[in-house]
Image (cartoon, rainbow, N blue to C red):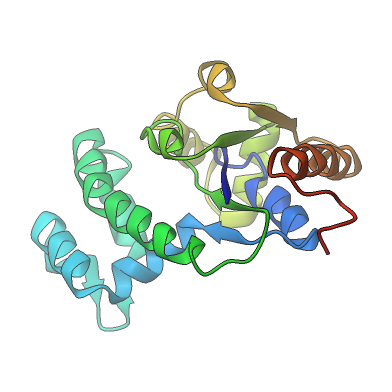
Length: 202
């Protein structure tokens, strides 16, 4: 089974692209959602996070994402240490998940797939890009944060110019109809690479 990475900077529209692959019948693993679930429920990972960040990392309701974000996004070393604990757990979870899928290929959606080197474990990588101004506006509207806070998060991700040379496919996500058409083109190429055809895969 072919494993395809789907990545892009914050606000680029990875989730929109992922939804198009899902609509085409392709299983998509949402690394961000799974990471949050593992951080909440995996006892080993939970203990590692508590040791790293302290008891405030969890409140009575569970994982305190807002408090953790306030700590790590202003501290690159702390963010790196957190990722070094979370990413191996996510990779193991993805490897288990993909063995349960029945499809010509699967997609792993992850924000920093290129930065952390995880793309090297996959067969192909799709990069979603969009103008920085557009990305900032999307995140401000989505997360109810300030543009300054969004730009602070962006500092921890590579620029599109740094990512493009490592990607096998690039999707410019500014017009949804064009984005959908590009996904369908890539889908057909991946089916061919997997030895399947649109007619045989349904």
